[in-house]
View (tube, rainbow, N blue to C red):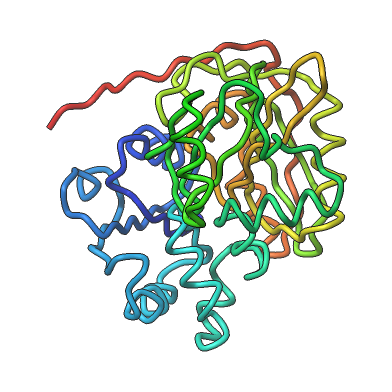
Length: 298
């Protein structure tokens, strides 16, 4: 019997290849998206237009669809915030959606809260004081939108006064994304680091690597904040150490790289959610390079 799951943002540019791969792995996919622009209805088993993730009607909409599936994966930060806030009002939805606690969602989705929380817990983050190049980010934002670097002191000073932005030292080094799965108790079950060779909002070229120190850093972080299901962490490493850049309490945009390498966070989190025996990866294709191509036009 196929494993029935729901995935949001189904019309996103990364989703066709991911969903087609999941279908080959035995999943029945119900896709939703607030936009009808796209062709998700042609590659999902079922597709529904959803309200926007920030809408008051979104939880009710998702609750109605929850009876059709065994697990729900949300790909949009606003959806995560909305559902984590309102999930207590929808008992059936609560049984289906794979989501971290509300506190975790709030901290990870707001870069100012994120910085304050982790600096208090002695996790290494880029400093708010930069001697050269600074990176300026919206406090609440996703997908690399409206993020820029500058060494112009007048611009830096202006954005530092705006609580809607975070201004940090720009850390040069090697970027890593780590795809993880956590169990219901917040314990790390499996993780696989990926070196970001080339990124255009999401990774276009990535290399699966072994990196024990990154895994240890994630285990340390999970002592302070509880996670559940698929989570992705972003780090930068240089001669001065490992810097935590971001945590996304959801599947990563390039999770397909991890699946291709032998680690399927959706399958493992599905098994955890359904209280089934966990199928851990038997062999990972380390040092394998993966390339993303946009192969469909419609």
